[in-house]
Each structure stands twice: as C-alpha cells, then as structure tokens.
Amino acid sequence: MDIAYYMGQVPAYPTFPSVDALHAELAAVAAAHPELTRIRTIGTSRLGEPLRVLTVGDGPADALVIGGPHPNEPIGFRTITALVDLLCRDAGLRAALGYQWHFVACADPDGARLNEGWYGSPGDRRAYAERFYRPDLAEQVEWTFPLTVGDYRFERTLPETMALMRLMDEIEPSLVCSLHNGEHQGAFYYLNRDDAALARQLADLAAFEGLPSHHGEPEVPGSRLIAPSVYSTPAGADMGPAFGAGAGSADYAARFGALHLVAEVPLWTDARVADRTGTGIAYRHLVATTTAARREVFAMLETALHAVADDLTIRSPFRRSAEGTLQTFRTFAKHTEHAEGPALPDRPATVAEQYDHRQGVHLVRLRLLGAFLRMLDAEIAAGNPTPAIRTQRALLAEHFDRWVAEAEADTSGMQVEVRKPVAVQLGAILLAAQVGAA
Image (tube, rainbow, N blue to C red; front, side, top):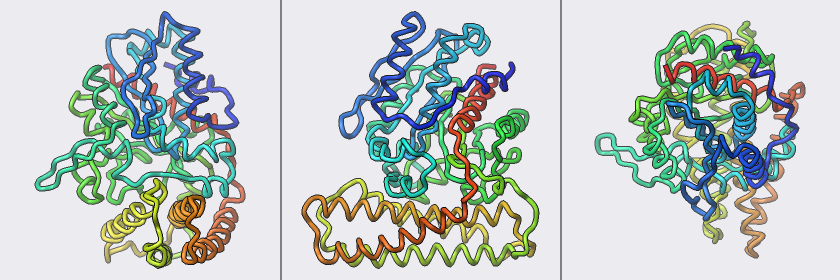
C-alpha cells in the first residue's frame, strides 16, 4: 500500500472544529454515504452530552479509532474526518484494509468545549495557554479504565470510558488507535507489541511531511524504545498506582488481543526536537536547571493555592484540574528525578535534549498557570472576588505574561500547518491497520 499517497490526500485545515462542527461534518459524510455508514449513540458524558460512534464499511475485522481522549489534543478530530472521507470515497482502500471501522471522534466532549476558545487559532501560544483545559489523570478518558494491582484498586471509571469499554466488548477489535498530540515534541508512538518492522515504518512517517521525530527525553521516564521515536506502551499496572489513576485503553484492548497504537504528533513544529548534535551544556547541568525551574513553579503555585484556599467556593473543572495536575506534576517530577538518579551521563547535552527540557518547563508553567487563572476567573465571575482571590489573580497574571513571552521567544520560528501532523497520524493508522488484521 502506498501510504505516502494517502497521506498526500489530506486537505489543508486552517483550524480545529468545535464539538458541534465536528459532529456536523461527520453527519454530513454519513448522510452522503448511507450505504456505507451509520452513526449511533454509545453513551452519555458526565454533563449529558451524547457520545457518538460513526461506523464505516463491513470488513471481517473491526478497528476502533479514538479522537480527543485528552481534550487539549484536537489533531485527532481532523485525522478522523480525513480518514472517514478517504474510506467513503475509496472502495479499493476499504477492501485492502479489510475492516469495519468505528470512529469515536470526540471521546471527551465536555472537556473539548472548554478548549474551543483556542481551536480557531492553533498557532497562538497565548490563546492556547489562556484557554487551555486538561483534566487531571483521574478524570481523563484515557486513564480511567478499571484497574486492580495488588492492594491498589481504581473503580472511578468515567461514563465516557465506560462507553468505550462497552463498544470494545461489542466489536472485539483487532486494532485500537488512540490519537494524541503534544505541543513542541516531535512525532512519536507507543505500541503494545514489539513489532520492529512496524516500528521502523512508523519512525519514518514524519519525514514524509517534513516533520521532526522526537529524539528528546522520553515522555514517560524509563520508557523502552522499540525503534527510534517508537516506545513500548506504558502499562496501567505501573502508571495507575503511581499517579492515582486507572488503566489505559491499551490495557483494555489487550483483552481482545488487539494491536494498540498511540500516535503522538506535534501541535507546533521545530527542527531542534530532532537535532542530536552536541551543545556546550553538560547534560547533568541541563537536568539540574530543569529540576530547579519545575520546583520553583510548584512552590509558587502551592503558595498561591494556600493563599486562596479558604475563599474558593466553586468546585469547577478548572479548580479540579489545577489542584490535581499540580500534584500529578509533582509526582511525575519525583519519578523523573528518581529515574535519572545520581548516575547521570557525563556528556554534553544534545540540541534535542536542551530544547525538550526548555519546552518541558514552558509546558509545566503555562498549563498549570492557565488552569489556576481560569479557576480564579470562575470565582470572580460567580461573584466571589475576595481580596485574596483578586490579589493572587493579579500576581499570577504578571507571571503568566512573562512566561508566555519567554515561551514565544524560544519558539519564534515555529510553524503551524495542521494538515501535516494529521497526515502523519493518518499514515500511522494505515500502517497499523495492515498489521492488526494480519
């Protein structure tokens, strides 16, 4: 199969769709191809939003594609609309792949609606940070599958996750693809099988679109490489107890022997993420600088939270995100520092590592601070502008302005062309589909 040809069929997309616009697009495609498609409701979100699955084709095997399991990651919305359009138009592609395809285009519509303020301007770093929302792990669709490990049990499964479980129980998929995107990382992947041939093919996809692959630090400390930029899927048994979450979609897909692919693509691109040349900075110094910067952020926001704790009255999603994510980032930092340990390599850091560490600091700063500001704004909008809340709002806004400016200065050459990461995700699904049905 000529994967590059199908990647080249992805159209230009200037923006990401709202939840309503996404569902309207898919409904229009289904209406135009009633003999090939059907849409049905498989559950209801926490706020009462219908959760829809679009089914295409009638192949002997079943594939599930999950878009938006994290609501700040909308590239998968466009990947699904592009792939659905291809499958409906190309009978030869449907026959060659041999699947009945099931698309849950927006797995967390409640969270997605809280991000819609920046979907229309994906290249605006300030808009992204100001209007950013991401639930903590224990409220994420991707990480709330049931889990029992020794004495640890996670049973707070979300309605959205339950809907995905029921769908998998029904279709018994051979392939499950969970579509994610980062911010400034290069493209990388998680596989639940040590398939070296597939991993090498996945690693080559980004270059087809002129995007970098990720060669900085692994997203999850201690991740095992199958091929450059392709990692073995983290096990829920390890992640859940460490972070107070559940199992992942890969753990549930394993019940059916399914091939599980996580396709992580960048929202913004920069060639430095793939530059493995050395710098004049010692790797040990780089790690120490990043550790100190993270701790500074945590301490500042814990002080701010303590200052307003007695005045907070609304258990908003922004408050839950701010409080929970601060704790998760602290836990993650401890695991990272433990994994790095005292025996850090005595060598120069690469350009990719230096860039990745700096972007990691920007990510922690702006995600946390954006959530804190939205938490305080929710209190003020509800008529609770106490002196402590107003004081912290002003102080944090000053930090926010400075940190946004620093992030923008570090990425002044960034480029945004939505179709490129969409094409890479689409190519990854097609590659995995050839293996999953075998």
